[in-house]
Image 1 (cartoon, rainbow, N blue to C red):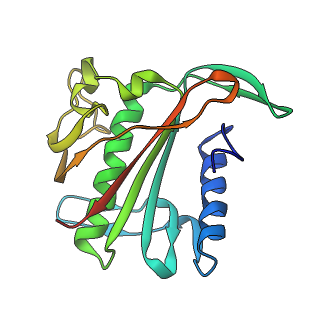
Image 2: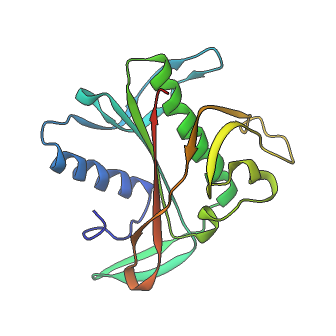
Length: 188
């Protein structure tokens, strides 16, 4: 996918491109975008839509596309990316992992994926401040707590599995480094 789309305008652009790629790879796949899922667990009721749902394979995929400010042209196309709030995206990514876990544990889903793509080196570096528990540089496990000011939207997240984190090179359009990480969630 990186050869054809080394950079995206937005998370929706990434979502659409990944869906097309999945469909090309698995022609029988019923790929759905923004698929509504009602998930009720002991801890929460969740009505958010999944970014991608491969219906006949029962595979949920959650995506994050977070950026450092960037204005560039690539292959005749202009890109103007705004800086994302890194600590928020760390929290939201871990929340995606937890949501996939809940689907794997509490439904007939056998596996799912949380994927993040970014050009911001702070995402793959050790976190600090409020988001230190949500650092995406090494391993995710146990209960992760937002530090500092309390936020009703940033409740502690308890993960069932231990997730070693591995960042990989995605692309280098105009020598701008993009990396990605895939966290596979299965019941252990």
